[in-house]
Amino acid sequence: MSPASTGASATVDAVPSVPSPDSATDSRMTPGGPGYRRMSFALFLAGVATFALLYSTQALLPLISGEFGVAASEASWTVAAATGGLALFVLPMSALSERFGRRTVMTASLAVAVGVGLLVPFAPSIGALVVLRAVQGAALAGLPASATAYLAEEVRPKALVTAIGLFVAGNSVGGMSGRVITGWVAQEWGWRVAVGVIGVVAVACAAAFRLLLPAPRHFRAGSLRPRVLLGTVRAHLGDPLLRRLYAIGALFMTVFGGVYTVIGYRLTQAPFSLPQGIVGSIFLVYLVGTVSASTAGRLVGRLGRRGALYLAGGTTAAGLLLSLAPSLPLVLLGLVLITAGFFAGHAVASSAVGRTAQHGRAQASALYQSAYYIGSSAGSTLGATAFHAGGWAGTVGVGVLAVLGVVTITLLGSRAARVSAHREPVPAH
Image: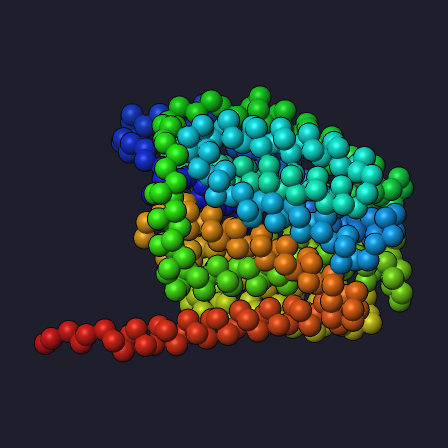
């Protein structure tokens, strides 16, 4: 499951309290029905804008380092600040959407984010650029915090998975295309023009989103009750299994964030010395992740959740080690394995959160998303710092430690499950 597919409601359940009439009287949208295509396309565009903006500087870090005269560890903050801002504001934005409405919060979030996006190309210093990116990430938190709740309220349950899938597709397309576009544009006109182009694309997506998204018909405003929200969050953080799943998501993203933040530096330097456009196109490897995430359900069916996590971790570790080779084909194969392992592991862990939480599923998913983006920020910073200190081997070392963390946590989960099974009373015969 994509990070953007988490729940957003500040109520107790992931699916907001909506009446469940029979199909003859249910006025919610369904494929082929009035407004469904408009809604689907609107949220697809919102996903494109969100993730194109969020990672717009990732493929450009070598150019940013060169212009401002800073190391990779400093330039990486342009990514870490955006994902960190999103991580910190997911829960507050979910509460605001519960009070003021999903469409209102999504519209306001996109408006602020694209406005900041048009200022980013004019940042006079690395410090100003980092601040702008942090504000942009905080604003973007309103999208994943509201989109799933909107869909749960406005779409019939049987069509909900398909509708969410289209929003997730927008996320992946935005994340991939934003990096590819910036790479090729920057090769000709520099990183400032590249992020400016992404800003203009995001403006067009945001305008179309607001025009196309149907007005909500089933939203019921709730009150902002911090005590209830905090109580739910406290209960989730007190659940050992949920804590393990949050940690696994964060560690997987630490690997992924570190690798893709630093890979541009490695490929633009000797012995590869690739041009910026080609480096940006490396992000097409994300398509492998789309496939691996979609097969995660079958992996769990065959191997169980923990077995699937072991396989995902092993695949990621193999990719990390393979990427150490001084051969471009082997490096690319390593990236394929890292990407496949990451997306499979993330899909397994994030989907398990929804099944584990017995109440407050929206907050459970939001906490996972927050941990996920904290991992992204940590991976970007640690991976770049390790690269500055020890080259690509240093970044790989950070990734391997994170994978070992995933394996250790999964082993602890297996042990806890065995202990729990032994404690269960034997039924009387």
